[in-house]
Length: 179
Image (cartoon, rainbow, N blue to C red):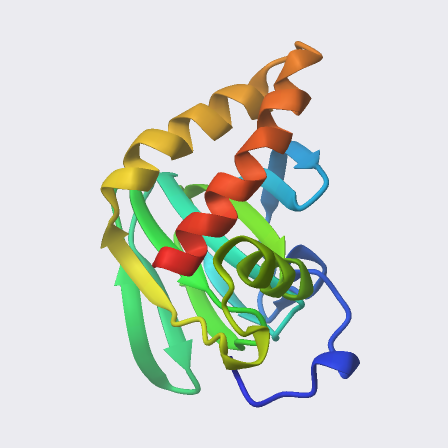
């Protein structure tokens, strides 16, 4: 985890966007469950953004589009392009992003406190010793299969879809811990 005071960072990932240029991002579908929150985004205009640390760990599954680049200050620290690559952004991590105008992504958010409780209850992991490591643009076979399923349920109008998405929360939290 980043060495930031968790008590002072109370906003969720998507509430922390600081647009340094005019960018248009559409939220197509969203879900708020017991532990998991998810949303599909399409980037309509290219530009730069800074996302300060949040209380969420964010799993980003790319659905398509051009190359996205991540920065720590002026230094590029990662990139992702194409379909079905995965990025994990730990809670409290602050990065700058350069986003293309044709990017489509699925974000899955798990609150840091919820993930720590889950790690302790399900895997007997000491929550104070839990350290999430970020990665960007990885080929993740697990998410290659799960990402489209989550997206399909987000796009569905069926009431059962929320039940299924709620059931994915432990699977996604467990995957974050394994990664």
